Length: 103
Image 1 (cartoon, rainbow, N blue to C red):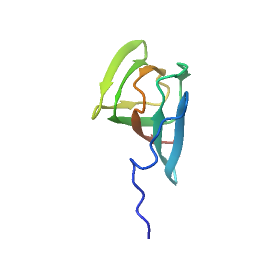
Image 2 (spheres, helix red, strand yellow):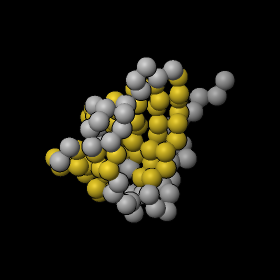
Image 3 (cartoon, rainbow, N blue to C red):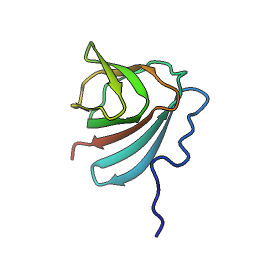
Image 4 (cartoon, helix red, strand yellow):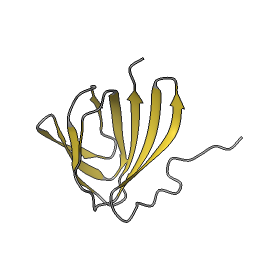
């Protein structure tokens, strides 16, 4: 049995973000996200609940019209249907996102 490491192969893409599914089981999906500083802010309004934590780096989100700064260790819950956008992120920021899809 191999034990994957969240911090292995965590170099950021040249631009944007890289989304990698770590676990998909029933209505649960866990992703690792690696961010480049060069992002195009995109608004997400998802049908599932999402809990996200910033493992390293810093970021600024716009969540339902409110500016939310994040530093490593911060986490937040985004209920389904909540508009959110990453507006600024540090190079190589590393995230863990847990999605809980409706059954």
